[in-house]
Image (cartoon, rainbow, N blue to C red; front, side):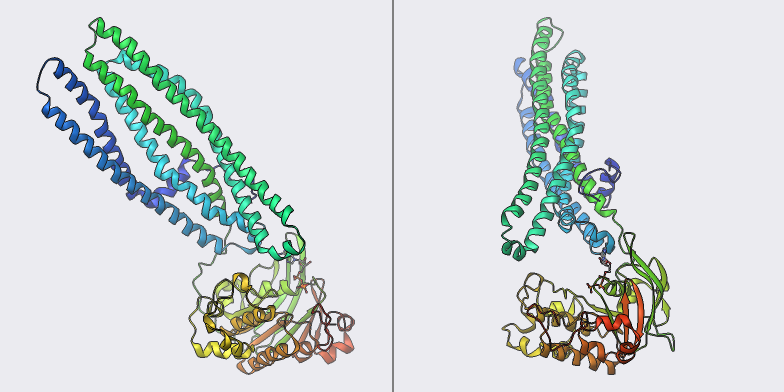
Length: 591
Ligand SMILES: Nc1ncnc2c1ncn2[C@@H]1O[C@H](COP(=O)(O)OP(=O)(O)OP(=O)(O)O)[C@@H](O)[C@H]1O
């Protein structure tokens, strides 16, 4: 889904009605109330005409005046209740759509997520859904009420005097032609405007999330200009839409005053010739003026609807993006096949967008073993971890967990077995506790255990709010090492069968690195299988088994001692990729 229009099928009225289906009870109730109020309004000109006729013939009018007052009060009350209900319906529609979008966006397939801008997706769940609310609160109902009132007024005019009705109809028909042309262009402008807002959100998100880089490179001006260009694009599209909507309104106004004057002239002549009662002329005149409001409503409703279609198009595109098929409920952990390895890759191939990253990878991880994954930058180590987590599916070959083929397990079942500490060690906005538990309740003793394992326990004790201390956006209030250790602690808390670590000690000084590795070593006793992408010689040497990856293939495997003698690739990595803890240069890269 590009920010531009046109990839998906254009959505129609049917999609809008589908969206309203879950709220049909509320919609019907609200529309009924508003229509009832309009009907009560329609009865009033007839009564007014009768009152005038009675005054002329000196008949009593008290009863009619009372009825007219009652009708007016009832109309106001019912209309207020109906419109309140409509607003509530609009909010319910927005909530329903947002729930749907949030559920889907959180489960989008990773390759899909990587090709879309986060800010744009967010704006679809926020701004676009809000724009749709108006289609319910104003659009559809204004159309329904407007159409009904216009039909009612027209029918009553025909009953009173068909000639005068034809005069009114002729004038409005001319105006309607112009309005139709305008309406079709309003949707286009609305979609352009919503798209520009999506780009604006994405650009702003990009700038704010890299604010330090922008500041140090003094790139505030080009970044600001970039975001302001989206602001201007949104403005231009908005103004274009407003201009179109504004040209339609005077057309209706002109038609109303034109028909009023014509009815006055033609009707006056007919009263003079005795073909029409004065009361009837007054009633038709009132209906002609009454038409202005419902026709205005109708126009407003159609304009809102066209704008909503622009927003619905973007919401629908987001809803159509492919998600992971699992429903998010944790699956039961599969029992291990006796004697099977914790994990096995057999001829696994994988490509990112057609670019091969793994070219037939095969290996096994014995249960409770510690394996180091080494290789040059870009050789495919992180990709192997991503496939184990089932962020992506292999193009061919099989992966099995505890002897079960991945094809026979749900993603959630696989992920129940696995924990991953990513290279970037992401920490989320919230407290240390929230980051540790990730929504899963965990007792204090367990948290203490993992915090000690990563040497964070004493530090947490010094914080005023302990584990309830806020860590800031992306953990900005923590040091790089604290973030990394928190991410490791989080992975340990789940007591995974298979622990994946992507350069787990890259941000740690030698002492903390050692503590964390000691903690991980103790996992050995718990039967946890560890696969670790490592650059430190001590970590690599410590492993039971080493896999050497090069250009998407496992080119050598064995212990450190064996590989030093047998693998040219491994010998090349030693001293370049795999470095001694003692030699660390100023950038933190071990030499
Ligand atoms: N999301 C992605 N989309 C497209 N290509 C990707 C993606 N992630 C990685 N690649 C490419 O796949 C190849 C393998 O990348 P991978 O991250 O697995 O390497 P790595 O061995 O972990 O490297 P490093 O040690 O630098 O982290 C690289 O050529 C990389 O450019």
